[in-house]
Image 1: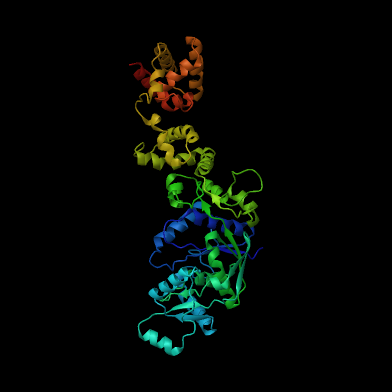
Image 2 (image 1 turned 90 degrees about the vertical axis):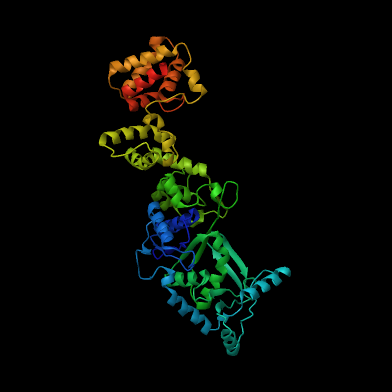
Length: 483
C-alpha cells in the first residue's frame, strides 16, 4: 500500500480538541503503518471563527504529540496551497463545471423562504430539506431576482431517485436515500465554498486514498459521494471512527475533564501517555498490553481493529497511564518538567545552581511516585521546601502525644549529630536500630518520627525524606516537635 495518502484537515476555530487529536493520530498511524503520506491542510473557510492563532495551536499540538507530516501546511508539497482560503479560484472553477453540466444551479431563496419551507415540511412530519424551488429558473427569472438585489448561492442538484451507498471500512455499507438529502449548497452567496464541496475538491486534487475521520461526518458523506459521481472521480475509501463519550455515556464535554490538547500540556501530561491513551479510544491492540509506545502502536495499527461502538474517555485510565510514564521517565526529564510548576508556585526563584538541581532531582525521585501529572508536583513537595512543619491532622498530633515519643525523637537527633551527614543508606541504618535500642515496636518508632519530620503519618519512605532534608534540617524538625 505504498501509494497511501491520508490527510488531517482541521478547522482553526478554537483550541485543538481531543477528538481532533485522535483523528490526526489514526491518520498518522495509518500512513506510517503502510508507508504512505500524511498530509495536514487547514479548512479555514469559516471566516468569522477561523484564526491563525488557532491554526498555530493545532500545529504546535501535533508537533508536541510527535505527529509529523510529510506534506501540507508549513511543509509544502506538489498539491498546495494547503489552506482553503488560498484555493478559492480552484473551487470556483469546479463549481462552474457543475453549473455548465446542469448538475448545479443558482438559488436565490431568502432565509425567510427557506425557514417557511422547513417549517411546512416539519408540520407534515417530513425530513426538512430544500425542495428545489430554484432548480428550473430561466435566465429572465434570474435577471429579475438579481436586479432585486438577491445574491445567489450555488446548489448541487441531487438525483432524488438515487440511493447513495457508502462503503465504510469501519461500519460496512451504509445507505442514504437521495430523496431525503435535498439540493444542498456548495458555494455560499459570498463565494466561499461549503465544507462538503471544498473537502471533495481538496481530497481529489490531493490524491487522498483513505478518508479517516470522526463518525459525526458520516451524515455528510452521501453528499460528498454524489459530488464525486458528478465529477466522474473515483471515490476514496471512507472510515468513520466512533464518537468519544464521557464515562456517563454522554457526549464528551468539560465536565468529563479537559477537552483540548493545550489544557493537557498545561496540566503536565506527557505526550507519549496522551498518544497511548488516544490510540486506545476506539482501537484495540492485538494483545492484553495497554502500555504501548508510538512505535509499537504504529506496528500494530489497522482499521479492522477499530470499533464501531463509542469510545469512553476514562480520565482515571489516562491518569494511570501518565503516572506510569512519569515513573519510568529519566529523572532529569521529570525534574526539568517540574521546575516551571515549582517556580510558579513560589517554591523556586532565581538561578538554579548545579547543587540545587541535584537536590531537586532527589526530591523528584521521591515525589514522582505520587503524581499522575506534573502540575500535581506542588501538592507533594511542601515538606521538602518548608523551614518547619506542624502536625497536619489529629492522627499526626496523636502520634506525637505518647510518653515514649521524646526518647524516640531525641535518640534519632543524637545519632544524626554523630553521623554529621546522611544519605539514604545511612538514614536506613539509623532507623533500623532505633527500635532495638529503645525496645519499642516499629509503629511506636516510625509514626512519631514521621509526624515530627513530615507533619503526617503517611507518605514517602522516611529514610528517603531524611536523606533529602539532610541531618541539620531533620534535627531541627525533631527538636521543634519536642517543644
